[in-house]
Length: 338
Image 1 (cartoon, rainbow, N blue to C red):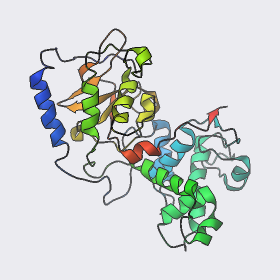
Image 2 (tube, rainbow, N blue to C red):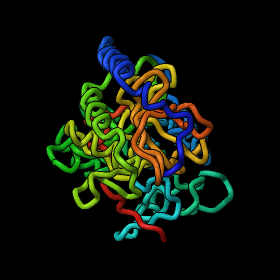
Image 3 (tube, rainbow, N blue to C red):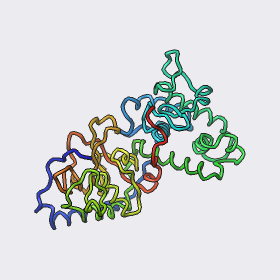
Image 4 (cartoon, one colour):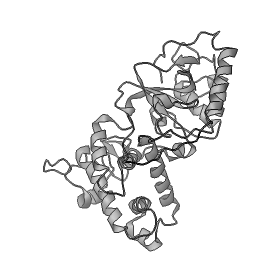
């Protein structure tokens, strides 16, 4: 939330000509409808999963037809946020948050070293995939979508899914199924153009009204802060203005929707910057894309909210924020460092 963005537009360029250009870009955002889904195997979006885990998630995410790598990634992210040392108040442990009893029954030696270690992602990630596929077998004859039934069994138990003849009418279970299937879209590599955001123009409109406002580390725009923002405070407020609630921290906003490629960026996309381009947990900065290679940016202490170019060595990618995608994000991790 603090790295300086280079090569920003001069004040004159940010005047009427630029805003006319911006208006055309925003209108153009809605010129075509498209979809994240398509034919072919599901692969992980570039940078969506830390490199340390992307290979094993891609491999084990194809263990059975009820799961795919993006779905497995969504479960792991929802459980621990990629924290291999996570421990919940209920003593769920490791990156996949197995409780001891479940691990004793379903944990496997994923890396073949002769040890089943819940704290080792090389065992825990394969175990999560294996457990999903076991549940899928239990509910394979239940009507409905096999993946949704598997997720429902994960949350409520296979017996309830069988008894209900599908996803049971339990609010927590239905919310879990929707959250994971929605989150999976933020981990999957798009197979076509990503659908445009209908809230993008409103978010940009909010952010552009803040141009020239002094940056404040930790700022969320409150009256006590004189309406000042840091980078993720600005993006959070901009999308709040159109009814979408984003997390407070830049790296937690990364999974609020699918990830368009650089050549598919559209106004309103969030653009992210990281210390390690292979690890989204190292994201340190975010801005709101406005088109033409520029973003509205709250850059660093001593600067003001301004237009900056997005092309820099630490650019990791972008997210097209969706209502469902933001709602599916973990509100606060139930896991804590052990």
